[in-house]
Amino acid sequence: MKKVGTPEYDLSDKLKYHISALSTAAKEMALPLNITTHYPRERKRQPDCFRGYMLFDPERCISCFQCSFVCPANAIWMKDAPSGRYYPTVDYGKCIFCHFCIDSCPGGALRTTKIHDVAYKTMDEMFTSTEEMIEPPEIIREDEGVVDYVIDKEDLSLKRTKEKDELIVDIEPSQGVPMVSVCVDRGSCLACKVCDMICESGAVSSVVEEATMTVKMAIDAEKCTGCGLCVKECSMQILRLVRK
Amino acid sequence: MATVTEAGKGEAEWEVKIPEKKLKDRLFYENLKAMVIDTQMCSRCLTCVSICPSELIVNEEDIVDFPNYEEKCLDCGACVRVCPRYDYKPKSGLGDYIEFTAGKSKRFKGQDGAMGTEFIFSAIDMGLIDRGLFVDRDEQWRTSVFHVRGKEQLEKLPLGGTKYVFADILPELKKAVMFSKVGVGVVGTPCMVSGVRKLQEEYPVFREKVKLVVGLFCTENFHYNEVSKYLIEKGVDFSKLIKTDIMKGKFVATMTDEEVKFKVSQLTSILPSGCNVCTDFTAVESDVSVGSVGSVAGFSTTVVRTEVAKEIWDYIKKMGNAEVGEGKVEELDFLINHKKEREKNIKQ
Ligand SMILES: Cc1cc2nc3c(=O)[nH]c(=O)nc-3n(C[C@H](O)[C@H](O)[C@H](O)COP(=O)(O)OP(=O)(O)OC[C@H]3O[C@@H](n4cnc5c(N)ncnc54)[C@H](O)[C@@H]3O)c2cc1C
Ligand code: SF4
Ligand code: SF4
Ligand code: SF4
Ligand code: SF4
Ligand code: SF4
Picture 1 (spheres, rainbow over the protein chains, first blue to last red):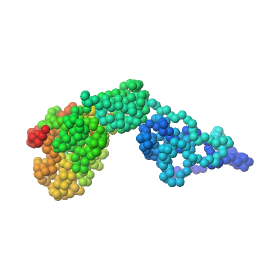
Picture 2: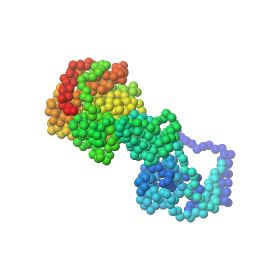
Picture 3: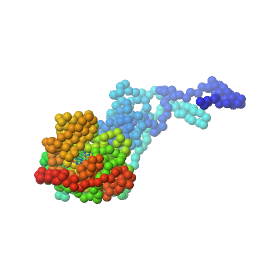
Picture 4: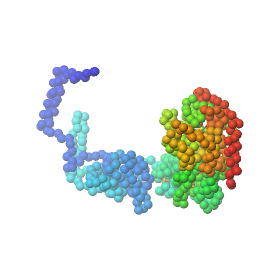
């Protein structure tokens, strides 16, 4: 067996390390340094891109189900609204705050906040309905200051400021890349009109011409929001999203 | 209408031709039902089930069905476009071929010479296809379909060998076509081979992806419920059953400790109505047909029909994957004629 011994220091090394340890101890005695945030009296300032509790804007949602498809924790359930549209609900008992949903939403309907401290009494309460996601939740705040961590090359120090950090971030929702659905293999189209039925934006038309026994299919690029629903639903997999 | 800027990537407008309806003002499914299913012409090839974008299924009685069609049938006509029995043009005889021969795989064990299995795996080895579809079975001899991509999968499963019960191959073929990057190989009875050809005729994606169609010689197949009931009455214990075969007019069920044998003609009462109007014994539309009659025991009679199949056959010989035997054309005459006689059962 190979034995690992203690490192060998010569006398000058030993002296150097002892002096450094003693001086740190003396410094702490004279001027104690505290690197923990006194939550809830103060909050650590989170970056704007912090992955926290999510808000939802129904005006921007195109009911494409993208968020629910992409969610690796299966936390998003699309529920039908009185308008007949489908909107996301989030089960925070499952959500792992990856925000893949936010990143993949083509309409920018989901956005982040810096809220990370929501308390629930039961598991059922963690199931957050669409309505509950539109406005920020009620937060009782006891904080009077914000803490910024400052990292200089030697050490980590705290900067305390007497202010309340804004938890609702005002950032532009991501625009995504504008996409449009096209048919890549017209010959394999069944003319089943599933794409037409599923499209939320009225971009697909399928017109049956009885006289010639043909179905005229068309996708209006102006109306198409690039949600990809038709691409997912086409059983022949002949629709693709391409850049507009 | 705005144009798509990423030119060449796809089309924003296209047209699809749909077939004429024989029964006007009725749904396409009602047409299929009236012309094929209710007339007892349906072969249960499941070509229609494979293409239907809605809920056309095969029901508990093993019959093609669409329970809530009034609501769910999209009236697209795909089923009617692909059904080989809708505008039935019965095929028979030996068909065209490049080489009539026999083979015995050195690598695999099968029903006869395992040439069905050999053709699929040689095609995988050649890089022609990346998956093949095989019929698997459970302890009770119920069939299921297996996507095979490598030889290891064969070692664990009884994938070679004939199961005399229908298998849902074509619905799996559609999935395989969607998954496959290179191409798909499929083994099936003559009715399924005709179904694959219809799919290829109608839809380019099947022309592009289905690279190899191996046909089996076939006199008849059976519905699971019916044949299992019959075999149990005859004293067959499924837990001990290792092989079923039809040889010289006899059905032979080989179990671990005994053999049950009886004349196939006794099975006439449970002969499926679709088989009763089927005239194709040799799968004339396949790339290569394999069967038992026409060669000595242990060998599969092999009818190489197309250039693709010829290429694979040459590869099999070059690699020494199989022993080459002798095929005797005249030995097929009896069964070819036997099936041709079923033409008289077709009412049109
Ligand atoms: C229903 C049926 C009836 C047949 N009738 C005759 C006949 O009358 N005369 C004759 O000479 N030969 C008949 N055959 C063919 C014969 O039984 C062998 O399948 C053939 O000789 C190939 O043997 P092999 O050893 O080369 O193939 P193997 O390497 O054993 O491969 C056999 C292939 O058959 C497939 N298969 C097994 N069961 C089914 C099924 N139920 N449906 C579709 N595919 C299946 C397997 O997936 C496998 O790919 C019939 C086959 C079937 C499935
Ligand atoms: S055409 Fe397809 S991708 Fe475009 S909006 Fe409609 S469903 Fe979405
Ligand atoms: S869903 Fe697909 S197959 Fe059906 S009509 Fe639309 S493009 Fe054609
Ligand atoms: S949906 Fe289309 S394929 Fe399915 S049964 Fe109806 S017409 Fe036939
Ligand atoms: S013959 Fe085949 S395609 Fe036609 S109805 Fe029967 S199962 Fe469907
Ligand atoms: S005899 Fe064979 S090929 Fe013909 S319908 Fe029956 S199973 Fe299919």
